[in-house]
Every structure is written in C-alpha cells, then in structure tokens.
Amino acid sequence: MRLIITILNFVNKGQIVGIARLSQLYSIIGQWRYYRSLATGENNYREKVAMSYQCIIYEKKEAVAKITLNRPEVLNAFNRQMLREILQALEDAEKDNKIRVVVITGKGRAFCVGLDLKFAREELKSSKDHQDITHLGDLRRIENLSKPVIAAVNGLCLAGGFEIMLAADLVIAAEDAQIGDQHMRYGLFGAGGSPYRLPLIVGIRKAKEIIFTGKWLSGKEAEQIGLVNLAVPNSILENATDELAAELAEKSPVAMRISKAFINRAVQVDGDMRVEFAIMSAIVNNSSEDYQEGIRAFNEKRKPVFKGK
Image 1 (tube, helix red, strand yellow):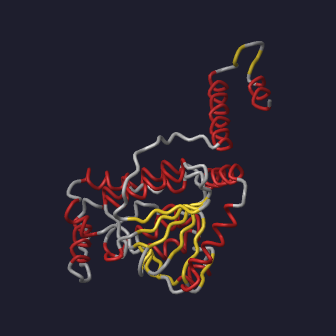
Image 2 (cartoon, helix red, strand yellow):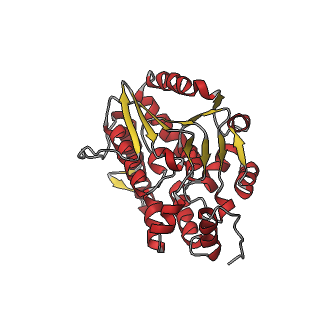
Image 3 (cartoon, one colour):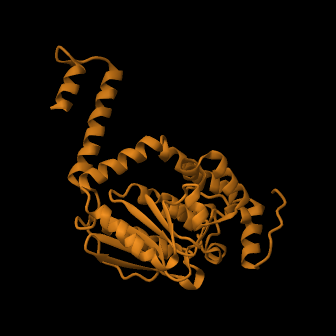
C-alpha cells in the first residue's frame, strides 16, 4: 500500500511529471523489489552439481554452515582452487534455507595468510591473470551474503586473510592471534578491501598506521581498537564462536537479512565503485618492478629492496 501511495504521489492526472520524477519512480520500485527479495529470501542462485572440496572443509550442522580453510601446509594461503571452493560453499549456504549463519575459520596454526605468492609467481603472468584472480576473490560475496558471517580467527591472519576477516560481519579472535595487513611489506596493494573497509572499522588514522607500517596486532590488541568484536583464549575460540552462531541463528532470518543489507548499504556509500577502483589500483601496482621485487623477496625469504619503479 505504501508503494502504491508513493507511486500516486508521482502521478499528476494520470501522467508522470518529468523525466527526473520517472527516474525517481524507477529507483523506488527497484529498492522495493530489493527489500522484498530480502524479506522473502528470494535469490538468483541456481542449483549446481555438488563438488568435492580439496582446499576447504565445508560442513553444515543444524542452522550453521562452516567453511574451514584447509591448506595448513602453506598457512592456508589461497590459490585459484581455494577461491573457487569458497565461492561454491558461500553459494550453497546462500541457497540453503535451513542455514542461517556462516562461520569461516582456518585449519592448523593460521586463519589465512593471503594469496599464495608461490602460486602468484608461477601462474599470474599478465595483467589479465591478476585481474581474473582479483575478481574471483571479490569479497563482496561475503558482504552481500544474506546471512551473517562470523570469522573465527586463529593464529596468523595476514594480507588477504586479513581482508576476509574485514569482510565478515562479526569477528572472534584468539588472544594470541597475529593480525595485520602486511601488503606494504612486500610492495603489494590490498585489492581485497583493506584500503576501504579498514577505515570504516577503526578510523582513517589507525587504518593508515596499520596499512602503511604492515604491523601485526595480537587478537587482544585488535579487540581494544574495535578491529575484532571479541578476543578469547585459543582453547575456547571454537566454543565462543559456536555460542555466537547459535545466538544469531535464533533470530528472525528476515530481520537479519534486511538489517545486514541496510547497514552495509548505509555505511558503504559507492561501495561498488570503491571495489572497482581498488582492483584497478592493484593492477597498476602489480605492473611495477617493486611488485616483482616483493614477490621475489618473499619466495627467497629475504627483505625486499624497493627502487620506486
């Protein structure tokens, strides 16, 4: 009824008044359709053939889906296969109406240390390769998921892993977790979200400090600046995460979907434009000699020597 009344306000004796008014009308209808889809749980995901996972462990128990990054031998650094599997799991959780909460964590002594730089050196040869892997790892898929996502941060959480954490809705970290952006240490640019998500969470000056220095924070320090919601002893991280997930799962899925979407849209003004600008910035940075030096230095386990080229 409110939509009809709003439309009638744009009508003058049976005719829409002006192009601008027509554009506003379309915007209102578009917003109404968007929020209606949130309220009804409609989505555009199609059923896909179930795939076997090699780089993650994907489990569903009652109302909670859990994605465990599973390359512990490389501290859960992600390659193309892992990114594809994360996407597949997120799509499955999205379309499964029984699932109300998603948890992301890591196996072993790390949450995730970001892009596998050995993989990057061997397989990312051209700007198109870099563009493709950046789009594949677009973390808007976490933000735009209609269900809340909890990051349970154990051990090392660096670079791209740090960006996964930033894209999550809530974060519980082990007190002794090591959390940091790290990109700057190796001449990289955080296309996955550090430059635009981090200032929204901790403020612009603290964000610049974390990004420019590449410093690491403990889970306890991250809690003190609001970077994570809660820091707990590592021994109870899983239990604390389970308790939070169970609490969220009891809430109305409709109100949860709408609240998450509204907060994200209200806070992240021009979010899509910022993501695309970040991707372009990364592509430019990745064409530099400093970027190549950073990759070489990492693989050779030495300190990079940057020349500003």
